[in-house]
Amino acid sequence: MQLMLRRHSLLWRLVILVVAFCLSLIGATHYLSARIDHYIAHLPERSLAQLRGYAAEANTALAAGPQALAAWQRERQALSPELWVVVDAAHQPLPGQRLSAQQHERLSFVRDYDGLMSMRGDGRPMIQVPLPHAEGYLVLRLPVELAPWGQRALLNALVLYLLPAVLSVLFGGLLYWLLISPLEQLRRQANALRANPLEALLPESMARRRDELGELGRSLEYLTQRLRNSVAQQRQLLCDLSHELRTPLSRLRVASESDLPLADMHERLERETNLMQSLVDNTLELAWLDSEQPRLECEPVDVAALWDLLREDALFESGWAPERIGSSAMLPPGCVVRGNLNGLAQAMENVLRNAIRHSPPQGQVCLSAQREQRHWCLSIVDQGPGVPDSELEVIFRPFARFCEARPGGSGFGLGLAIAEGMLKLQGADIWAENAQPGLRVNIRLPAV
Image 1 (cartoon, rainbow, N blue to C red):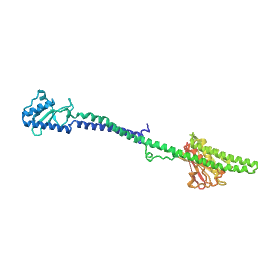
Image 2 (image 1 turned 90 degrees about the vertical axis):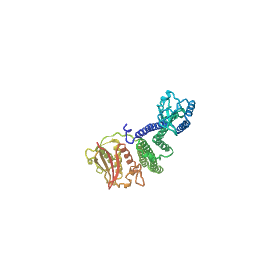
Image 3 (image 1 turned 120 degrees about the vertical axis):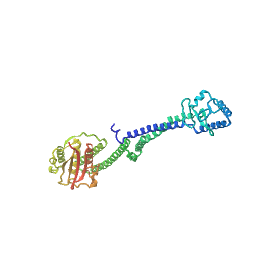
Image 4 (image 1 turned 45 degrees about the horizontal axis):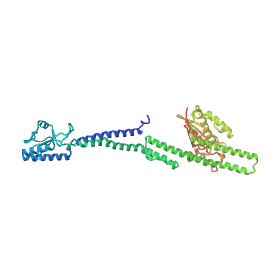
């Protein structure tokens, strides 16, 4: 419900569209109904002309005398047994005409022929038509063929059926433009992924939308980019892995073809096998982090205790003197972060090994920590040559190294990439900067 009530939610557009449709239908129906009622309440010009022709005939008979007027009245009543009478301005019949008592009574309910008509009764009111050249009126009951009510059924059908149909088509077109058209763009974008190698881009019109359809389009675009990056990384991993495996395999081939003593051959075989095993394990771990993105459970981690364990292992593997790796005593008290113990240990171990590998003879590596509001920023600093500023982000990419010979003994460039993947799964950040001399790798985690 909260998502539906957002300012740019699609719900409001639909509400506005439906309200506009209903109000348009009501307003158009009311307006056209009023216009139809006004139209059919007046006699059309054709009927008015015919009535004026009847008045001209009556005027001619009146000019010929009472007998001619009486004869004209009998003739008209014979053709149509309705009231046909010529009256003066006081609505009194002129001489020569005979009216019954009921007909005299009807003279009190006369209206002008060009005024409003009424459907009361049988819809045929008494009307008066002024004589063209005399003081008086022709009074008659509106003939059936001149009544305007015959078109009412057709006009009402247009208002009640045709108008809603036209507005419904317009409403459907607007609804299609609002909903189906963007979905059609997304469908075409999704179908384009079949033939296009994950290069489909979100249309600009969809990218600017801030409603649910825009979010759906951006999610699809993110998914496309995620797949594209994943496929590109997997291809790069396969390419680099094949390149890295060629070197130890070539050395094994050379060793097998040489006359090395058995002890040297065994040492060479063990060394190259361990090297390839480490390469394969690290590559598979990096691919697993990228594809699976497992959820790491976070807990309070004492950085000082963790650093002591990593320092002890690093001193044993490297053979360094203890004073070359800073101890946990250099850390401020209460340095406890929230993270995954195994994931954080592996990330910091990879950074530490990388620092040891690039340190000069008698160089030192130390760990420092600084509180930044709700976070701890851990910094592992070496005294090596550092990297160019333009390559500070590149070193976190798989197989990123700056040695042209790319010897396996100097590492494969996977440690920092694995460290970054592990830390991202914990909601932590990692970045590097030159310490002059050396390289400083910073890790920021939530404080406890």
